[in-house]
Image (cartoon, rainbow, N blue to C red; front, top):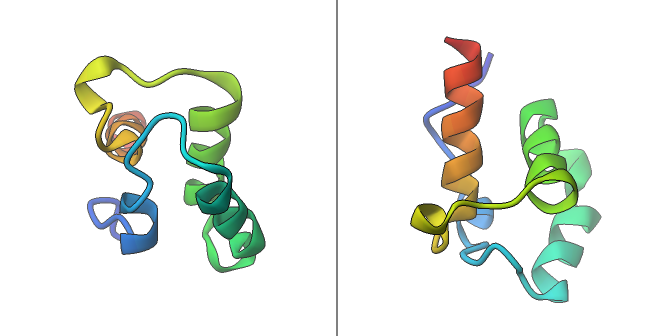
Length: 72
């Protein structure tokens, strides 16, 4: 299992809960390079749930914290 505490730089670059289409398109074009956890987090973040205000500048951090908590 990969190190859950390391978030790839391209995912950290998505710094808004409502990213522009270019950033989402980049992720979708490169999803084959992502692991199952990152794909699952992507779906939760932008298709099924929202991001709390405290994580507004780094929504992927919120999702990663949720992933870590669920694995513990």
